[in-house]
Image 1 (cartoon, one colour):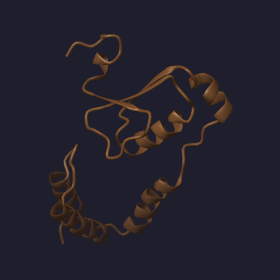
Image 2: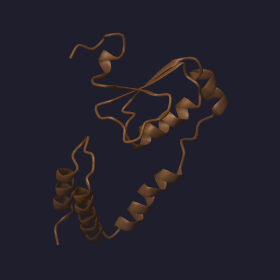
Image 3: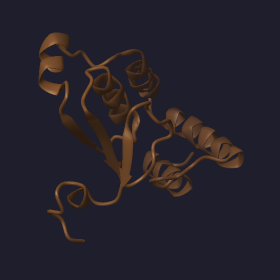
Length: 131
């Protein structure tokens, strides 16, 4: 049986950052995930903990947050992942005048009302970055 480290390296090779899945690659990742879970005794509990994140929201004190956000411009860096996307959904309900998300990779699922930017953050904020 392959080691945990070897399996993780193979998974990273199959699914590098910014990767968009294909059917064959997903099947390979499922097999590698099975190997990884077999190699780690506590893996099922860890997987359950990880998957439970999908069922939780981000608790936000609504009135205070809306008072701080409403009518303002908001930039979320790294908003294309799981946590960033949920944060964007929460912020969109607080009615900022502009809601921007900047990340190196596009989101898997866009949030309505969000303007997505790609590239380095300094280019988005008043031209304070050069390169």
